[in-house]
Image (tube, rainbow, N blue to C red; front, side, top):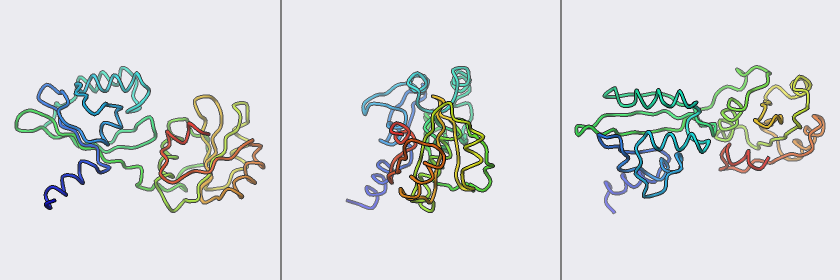
Length: 221
């Protein structure tokens, strides 16, 4: 394999989200990371509007509402070059760069910013919403300095104020869509997490496994 072939294979199979759309904004090529993020089959070639609307209907992709999506569709590709940050429902923060080709197509490159650590000390001891909680959880999952990492959940009728008063300074609490409270316990092994969960009145503790995403993890808590 030549150096050039190795370079392109690294791009194709790597973590960057890469895609090429034609001048009608129909997908021509995309690497596995891009297709997996949008839930696209290997041979699917939808327009960008079609794939975005399908993602919204499936509850995946960017954390936008239907009106916000339609505004995105209306304004997409108006600039020769466009760079922006985007929050996704699975908790990731993606940095996108879109560039118009000489043929009128659009090259899209997405970079996951979740691994860029944000200071937990800058997050006040407050109850986070579901989306903000997923974003923080994804950040913790990508930061090896907070491992071991454990989670615990409490019933929907639990007093958030009581939980916030009992958690440690580096812990965080978010309310999930079903009303349950999710407590994130960074730098905490299973034994200590079980003890802390008992102090909070939680029935169970979940030990996080390296490589899990926030979306996968929340399915088993």
